[in-house]
Length: 436
Image (cartoon, rainbow, N blue to C red; front, side, top):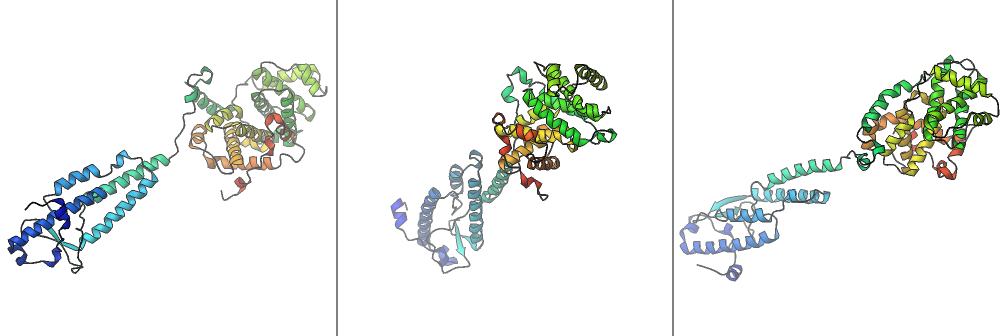
């Protein structure tokens, strides 16, 4: 007997749990009534499908039809962005599935005379059901598990910090030599061990010590600033002084002359406009003659075998600052910290590349107030955060006492408008905590 949708809605749903045994199967008229009831349940099931993401199957005949509806209406996780909000929704849906499956375990399936499935509740036989019990497809829970596993993998990939191509923006700049810049720095890294000196070379000196070296370099930093020379010149000057003193014994009264000649050689190697010898004599308050200065220049070049092409901390500073995507404040503070380290004799135990990386790392921590060393910095410097901590903590102590004592040349230099009053930055004291 055909029925309209309105008649199906008006029909009272017969509780299937009230009729059991052969009497149900033997009544043809009553079987028709059950068939009408089943059709009403199908209509209700279609209404449920319109509002829920999961279908309810009440008989064998409607399984393929309902499965097609489910495939059209269910959300496709591969077409949705993987977000934490979506992950929470999927977890909530999975929990809902588990609760419904527990309810279904308490029901026993049976069939009527037409071969249609009906469900008999064995736990609560007296309850009158106004709606059919939903039955989920067998593979729904399995697909949810697979979706959650795939989602977790994709979220891990998103959270992982990528390594940035720092040379992509300079691809069309011939001065950046992006085609072989990595090879250049691999060569610098290999050669920097040749430019390093023994951290205790002062033992062989009989008339000078590390304090005199610190006074000389602190003074040369101010001279370098007065002449407005390039940064490369300062780092090469200190390198020449240490390499010469590690091979040649010098008396105390000649130590200042060694510093002046080292700066002259560095200027000839790095600068376009080189200070004349007369200017250097005036800077030394005429303590040395022109002849003495030229004789010391000859001695130093012969001792060093004219080797001036050694990688200093400066070349690594430029590369690592680019990797850190630094701004002007980070750059100035990094140079302030590494120039403080140049003065200290004990910092000779660190390689030039490690000094550069530690200075940038300490500057970032100082400005941002927390530890900052990205995967890109680690990749290009070949130093992890743990490898930098010892050197970085020493730089923090130098920063703390930069304005005190007799050696304040670096502090005065960076206290000017030219260097944007970098010394006003408070030291990163939290790095001194041994628990970090």
